[in-house]
Image (tube, rainbow over all chains, first blue to last red; front, side, top):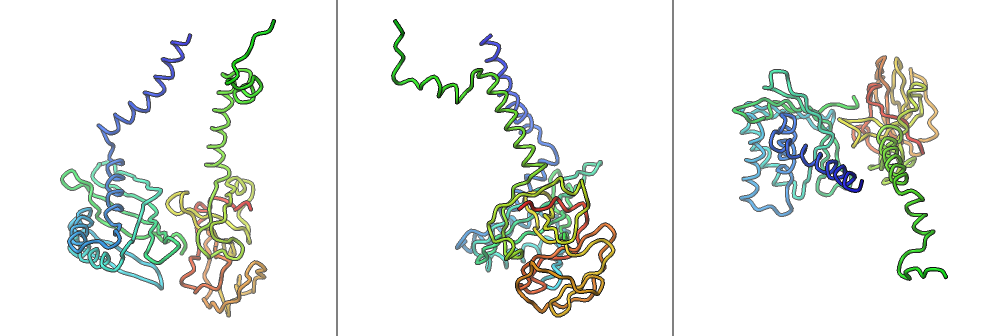
Length: 166
Length: 173
């Protein structure tokens, strides 16, 4: 009796472990995109007093998440509106932002990914939660990010903010 | 006659209070409670913490509240309801008050809120403001939401139309 209970408990404990192992060895496309987004958020954060060389390296790393022809549209009516075209401009803007956003942090929550049937493009919808230096309240923005697969890697082709309230 | 118990062992009543008469039943009962609480917190009463000042003075910052997700299955959202509006999901939501209903127009003149051109009595707004905005038509499946803190600049205050499917529920407290 005790042996059977023990075996059941062991099975219940091992099942999630097995599933986790399977997912690590065979990640889904959704999981790969979520991983890329987590990496982007991590890289976009600016540590306090970041060294000049790190600023450049991290700006390059941020740009590497985007396709060469990527486009970013930010439209906050009455406050800020900008379109950034191409990986080079993204890198330039990222470097400029890192120079003034000392201690900036961002995280992506509620990430939902839909991969197209052909497996070559995908759309991610998420909420970006950003803490700007000096602000006590985080800024939140809903984003829609289009991905495309380039040589096996998921790269951002287009990113824009969604007007939750319009 | 009687047997002497171990002095270091907890008394019988304490063990019974902790794990019940039948440990297996207690375990099942605990699992049901945990499951019920998880379902409750995810689908029925979502716990939230208010961040930001846009709903002041009605809701102070860091106040804990609950979102009643079932109420709008009984009736549609009503004017004056304080609701939570989802962004990409339920982990970060806006907390706003419904002022405009489907088919109406919402405008601001000298800080007063006008619905279809008529001023709306808003006892929850404690701070006068000077907001000005031309009439905004609210769509058939939309609601106009705004915070109670009108001391903020019009453009700094997140407000506007939202579709019905984004309204998660009504704040309980």
